[in-house]
Length: 251
Length: 160
Image 1 (tube, rainbow over the protein chains, first blue to last red):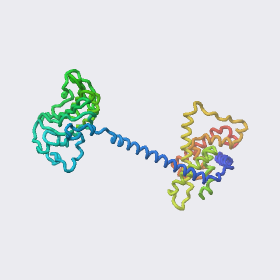
Image 2 (image 1 turned 180 degrees about the horizontal axis):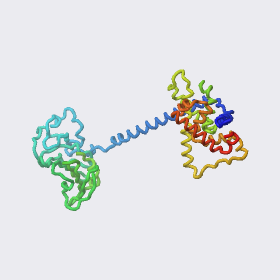
Image 3 (image 1 turned 120 degrees about the horizontal axis):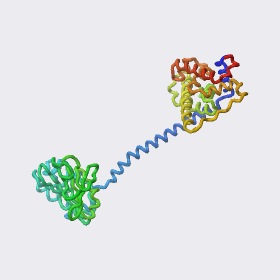
Image 4 (image 1 turned 135 degrees about the vertical axis):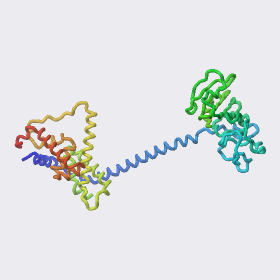
């Protein structure tokens, strides 16, 4: 007798009394059902997780604070509201130069402003320095409550350096946002109006400088992109919302 | 289901020999049959499903043995105690053979079970294991050699 035969005999003796249970088929079916249920549950959980991950940013974007408060953003004379210029003008209202497809003087190519109530009769402005941009520019997305536009945004300077300035005043203090476009801008220091040692911070990832303005208020300046700088100045209680306003400026 | 009724005992015995424990064998066999049931469409109509099920069974046993080996290495700070072979047990050659068979690696054990219990040819064993015939030959040879070596003096009555 050799090892192989002995091994065969040993294995036969080992499993001589081994028989499959009568419930084997039922057990297999039950295991199959359990597996299917587990897979469905896992798939449902994964789908719910993906849906939640996709919906949260969408919900957050809906919850984002709109530019200004419609209730407080009207000018004293009932002029234009501080609505976003991306919204189309109401039908029948006075047509703006941009709505007619004509170029606007002193303003960027983006649709930035609505006309004031009394300017439609003046017709489109002529190109050149010192123009006026009415209403709220589209690149400003947040204005604190309690402020009212001090007037339409103004555009000064020439082709080399053009500055668009918008101002608000109110019981909460004052706010001034200036966007400077020019090829000579090398950094936020070029935009600083205040003397003294500036503080360093960042606005949406861009390096920024902050400084206290002489007398009152604070300012923050940064280059939003090459050739485009922004300075936000604020006084009064609005000063505490300076960074929030700066984060909302998207030139 | 007719297949399970007809071949359930044989498959359970094969699983028991490869696993070494009855409870493990039943669990592995149920898993293998469930897997085969899930993919029953892959079996050509009219062909014998047993090689397919046996291959699933062998793969499951080998995978499970590897996983348990890793778990044992992680959880056991010292080697597990082995029962001391009594003089009476030593003379029971077949019992010793089975003990030594369980101590072989899962792949070598599967080769020996398929070759000497299922009486499969080398080619059929290679197909069940998903390896070459040469691998089956070498694994069977090494497995038998290891059994001979471990049995030591117990092989003397066999004249080897």
